Length: 342
Ligand code: 5MM
Image (cartoon, rainbow, N blue to C red; front, side, top):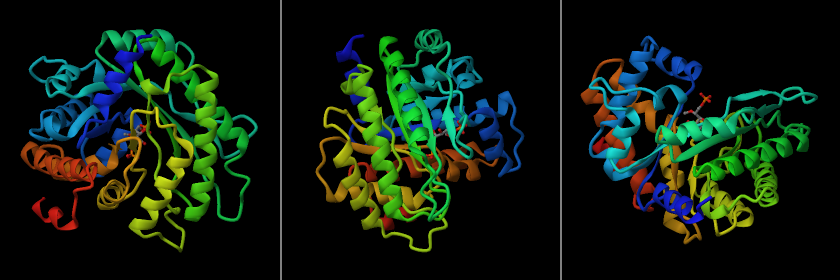
C-alpha cells in the first residue's frame, strides 16, 4: 500500500468547495427513481441519464470531486464510445465504485441487516482499479426501530457491520483504492435527535476501533456519515442550528483528526435541508477535517425531474444549480436567497 498516494486521492475527494456525487444506485434503486418520472429503466436509459450528469458544465469541473459508480456504469461507454469513467476523470473528478452487495437480513436479529460483499472482494477491487476506480464505497445500514424500543439497533448488529466495514477498508487499501466508510443511521422512524446522536456515536466509536484493530491507515480513508437528525416521523423536528451543532459535537467526539475528510450522505433530507445543514456546520465551525457532501438523492432529485427522461438542457441546468449550492455550502458560503437563481 502506498499511503501517500491514498492520501493524495482522499485529499482530492474533499477539495475545497467540492464534493462527491453518489450515482451508485443499484439496478433496483435506479428503477424506483425512474418510476417517479415514468421513464423506463434500461441499460441505455441509465447510461443516458448518467452521461448527461457527467457531461454537465461547469458543475463537474467546479463542484464535483468524485463520482461513486455502480458496477454496470464503470463498464459502460458514452454514446460516442468514451468510457464513462474517462468522462469523469476528464473533468478532474475521481471515479469511484460501490463494492458492497447490499444489506441482507442478519441472522438472529429480526428487523436488522448486515451488509454483504466481502467474499471475492480482493479480486473485484483489483479489476475495478484496472477499470479506473480510485476509491470505493461500502454502506452499513443501521435501522432505528421504534421510539421507546431501544433494542434496535442491537449492539450485535452495529458491531458486525463496523467489523465488515473495516475488513472492506483494509482490502481497499491493499488494492490502492481509498475506502469511503459509510455507516448510515437511517432517518426512518420516530426517534428523537438525541437517540440518533447516541446510536451514531456508538457506531462511530466502534468503527474507529475496528479500523485501528484491522490496520487501516486513516490518512487514506474518507468517512461518509449521516447527520444527527431526528427520525422523519418524530414530532420534535430540529432546527438547522441544532442539527449542525449536534452533528459537529458527535463527529468531534468520535473521528480522529488524521481522517482527511468527511462527506455526508443526505439520507432522505430534502435538497434544501441537506444544503442548509452542511452550510451551517461549515459557517459556524473550524474543524480538523473538511466537511462536504456525498449526496445521492439531494443532488439528483431536481435534475431527474427536470430531465424527465429526455430534456438534457433542463437536467443539466438543475444539476448545475444543486452542485453549485452544495459547493457553496461546503465552504459555508450558501444563503437561502441564492436558491432563486436556480
Ligand atoms: C445512490 O444510492 C446509493 C446506493 O443505494 P442502493 O445500494 O440502495 O442502490 C446509496 O448508498 C447512497 O450512495 C447513499 O445512501 C447516499 O445517498 P443519499 O441519497 O442518502 O445522499
